[in-house]
Length: 508
Image (cartoon, rainbow, N blue to C red; front, side, top):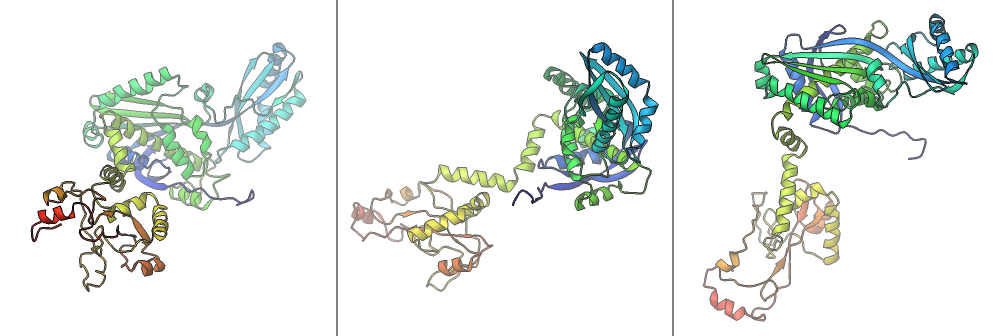
């Protein structure tokens, strides 16, 4: 790959829902796409979505305001000159609106807000941008206005096209106060029986936790115009799936969660003042984004801005679903962690970890087991290759167990028998076996002693099968044991004593 090559980073995505949404923008039931590496987010949002369908109105989403902002910076000789310039700009609002209309068909100047610090004049312009999120559209219009102001307003000079008073992709109070993007308030009234049955909690418990965690905890942490549990999780998953600028979750994560106990019913609300979303523009032409927006109903022929408003209320409803589910889970001790362990550490993974720890503890008391090798290979794909190279170096003989006999489940090497059960029984450690049978040998003290070895050639490889002479079994690696060369009978110390101890028919 060189500097001119564009690659694609794959992020797992799932559709969750459906969720029921009503309000002043849309009345719909729709599933939503979430692209995330945090897999528990999918069932969490799905639970909130399921609850929305149990309520007649579902999630009531109200679009309160929409605007995209860009601030410019002007310099003056002193504060008085900057103040006079601000009055001049205020008097020219209609003129500035006409100038903005020349910048595009869908951009309109809503208004502006200015602030003076020392000899610096900051002007924060607010625009409507149709179905686009509006970053570039607002910057183009602000640049045109800045050029006009510099030509017509005396006493000021150029400072910057962006004065950080916008504020773009930074957590600031002004975005929460004046808004940046679409301001959506979502509400859900959950009846008492649904709270008990679906959320396994009470309205009073959720309301109390919201005050203690989201209000007081955020206050102590120094949060800026924000009191919520995890808006950013849902917004990032939604933004990635719908082609939005993911960095806008910084201001998007600002918002306030409110929960009230209304005679056992739960009133739950999320206010998201900085939803920056669009259905046209950069990133929206990708195939998967086109497909997702179409499935969401945001590619229809509507008035300019309607598709983006629909997308915004769906995003805000998704935030409410995830926020409600998480807070409900946190009212119950241990529920959150149990769910994460169950979803992120699957049963297979748990067995792999357990078998590795158990094998390490009993490495000297039991032979190597093929099932352990299969699980270990799942954890470490390069393990089989390393053990195969070791087998070649040491000249291991394939298909033998720890006693030098043919392993069960494979051909019996010259005996003409083949086990019908292709799954060998699991061998468990039994440190006292030799003592029970009168065999008090220690490793290396005469007689036959074996050392457990691990995997040979992968059975999926024809050369490996030819070398090992083994049957293919589920495409897994071959595992066998190599015995040490047997010592002549009677040559080792203590052999005569052991022969005297072993009775006829007793296993050795």
